[in-house]
Length: 276
Image (cartoon, rainbow, N blue to C red):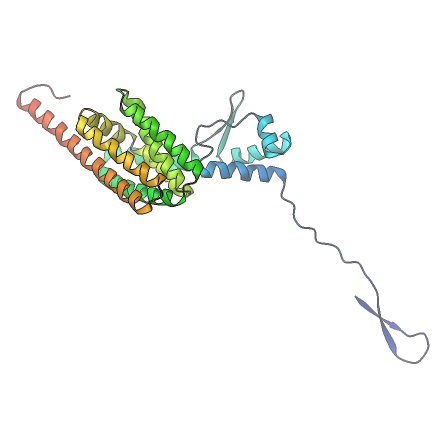
């Protein structure tokens, strides 16, 4: 900076002399540790490594893992509690809520119950979503994803050989969810989880129908095997095709189930039996 000052020699002109005036420094903003904690936990919720209902690890261990103090950890957690992503109960720990899914799931579950024609639309959407998920998973799955997929498919094969339908339903849903997460797209992961919750009753009924028909049960197993192999061998187009064929088979099976049920009721009415 410069300041004009009169020359003292009396020569009649001014000298412009530099005067060093310190300007205030603008310091870069520093992210508070609590914000960093909140951002990291939110990222884990988005990517699905923290799922609805999961309990956060013990405070001491989580603070060490994130390399922050326990007060900073508590403040970060409270930020997510305020956003509705976490809930804390006295003596019950801190859990992940289903806020990201609930606004989608709740109204659609009621709508599906009241409007059976929506079943077809849901299956079309599921076919589109799962074929894209399988294709992306075949392209993007890491070694860790493949090991996880191998494990859930092995579990699926194990329970499909049993008579435990509840275990079959859980393993089936888990298999499709793991593929969705291997696509490494957070929206696909969350939408698949939400959709499975909406159509859970359909999945249960369809598996019960197929389980009573060994030949079709074997077809279902072979379709899961085809999706698994295409993803683990990184064949995107084959994975997408296998997923499409699987959902088409599911759609046809649901239609067959509905038709069989209508025939049963019709026969009972003709026989004058009570129809429940």
